[in-house]
Length: 163
Image 1 (cartoon, rainbow, N blue to C red):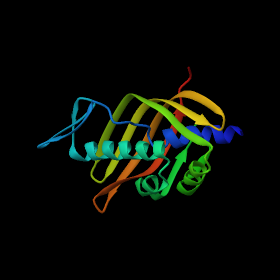
Image 2 (image 1 turned 90 degrees about the horizontal axis):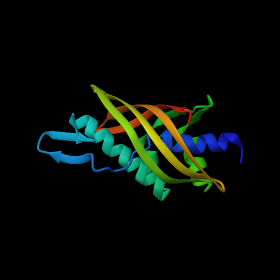
Image 3 (image 1 turned 180 degrees about the horizontal axis):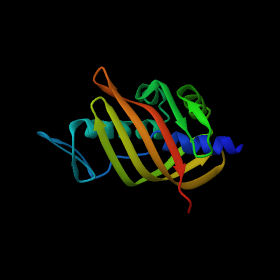
Image 4 (image 1 turned 30 degrees about the horizontal axis):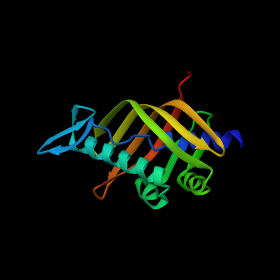
């Protein structure tokens, strides 16, 4: 497998800000919203829910859901300096060369500025790329924009954290 496929595979997970439903991400209780036990705004909570949807779609290989979460101009810059578009990411995912095995959120922060959200997270990813299974720790920064009442991911930067 080409190194770019390995990096793109990691980017697929990191690029969608690998997050899974956790006990720390609770449903709203009147006007109280929590992510990992911390009070957050409704918008931050909604972004976290979208992240959870995205990871679920990746695990099921559901390109339709992933395509709806990524904005049309979505790009990701991976830790090798490559830049991939939404179309390239979806095409690679549909090739069958990639499968998300496990994701652990080590840390996540979601900040909202009007209709823009910024997410920073440290995640541990276990993924199958071709015949190989790899585990990496990745620091991710992602930008989200709220349009027509829905949050969509517009850009991401993924940085490999040395072991």
